Image (cartoon, rainbow, N blue to C red; front, side, top):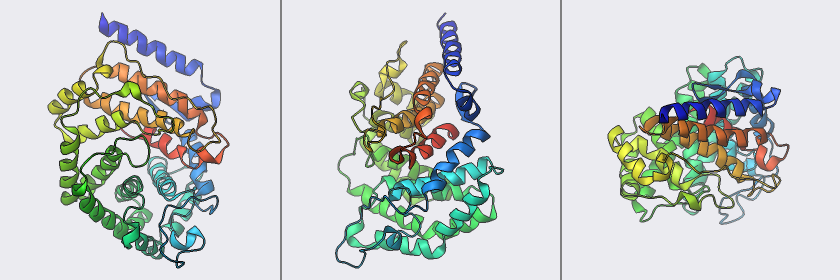
Length: 367
């Protein structure tokens, strides 16, 4: 009886989604095997956003520490690769997004422009200048660990791209990726407490992207320190207070990011036991987790909640895939969050447009 009920809910949910999407949105995103997927039209639509800003210098928010006047000047002078899209990490994951789309949709109408701009930005010279920031004592914490994680994710994507440009760019980026791997290995053992927030410094998110890079590159030292850190901080967690989420400017769910990390760390049997204990509310007959609401998309903090809906979706897809209970209900919940966010990725305001497309592509093309 319960399985029939879930099937009815699934059918009703999918019907509701398509009934309330515009024709343009239907062309951009489709549901296949219970999940939203990105179509070629959607890929073209989203690709335009990082292409518009990846070489746009201003507005720009820097996060570096200035110890003297040597770095005073345009951001492009000290971030020649990642000076666009408002801030360093958004520029990095905008580059990642274009590589992902070129891999999945090689005939993308924007492919030539994307390849040209990737080659211009990710040159050997530019990356060698980017490394200098991370090598300075005063900036050891720059972009830790959010930007670090996205840089490793970019390198992971390039390494898995069977294309001459991908091979060249991964060679160019490799010194910076190795630098950040070493910085992870130096930093994580010093941490006494995890960082359980819904913004950039969330530790679980930083570990999960770094883990995927370590798997691809067989960086056993990085993988070992990530596993030790995850087990030390999260293995004994239970009854996560997900009802307290979200915070007013969250774009990551502290509870769901942790749950999406731990299926990478634990065996399948261990994970199922752990996740039911950690998030029991996700495995009840009725799941109550409403999408975040945004009342002002011109506010750079408030628009974070659109990103939260996208990141919750990718977390829920991962949890559904690796748990043994409530799979369809979790997929439905992921789709509900995507439905709430996707119409607002290209809102017309730069505060969201400079970064949300990357989150949408990640949610639509992973798992």
